Image (spheres, one colour):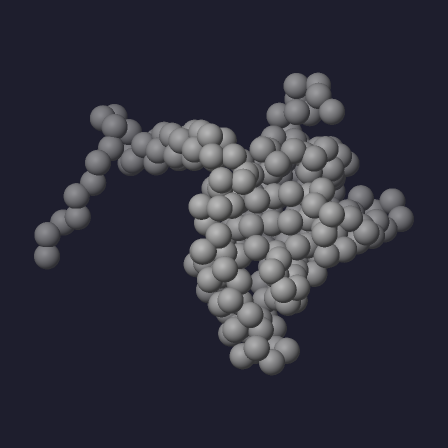
Length: 221
């Protein structure tokens, strides 16, 4: 068996920096393409994929017959408080460009849609459109415990089928803050769709946390 080839910058132990350069380039190119297309053309471009993804999750709901599975992940941030992050996120929710940029597989992030926050993103290996019901009314803050908790029911954007729910809890911690994130989906979509969405959470919340910290350090907000 032949040894696997590897490539790196001379003097560096591995190709980690090249991976980082590729990530930066990919983000820049994707942001350019999404910006040039605009929301309406982007929705038109992926409408067939969204229809297929929505149908797949309708089938999951039917086959699961009420059974669900839940996955959880905790994201930690240093030098950032719950108050700083929650405040930044509330302001960011008025800007689709900021929300979409946080995750390459965000296609629509419309938090002011009359039907409720409207999201089109990858779920598992398909693109799904859904409304986040009750998000704005779901905040439950304990007495001086530094926790911001929210929960939302996810409904498909074409027929209102309930496909699951998400919940978040932002907690102050000695290192800064933690975000406890969970998603519940039909049992037949597990574990793949749940594992993918926990990965999705980690990317978007890291992006948002770093943006909030940068704003704090820059004196904004």
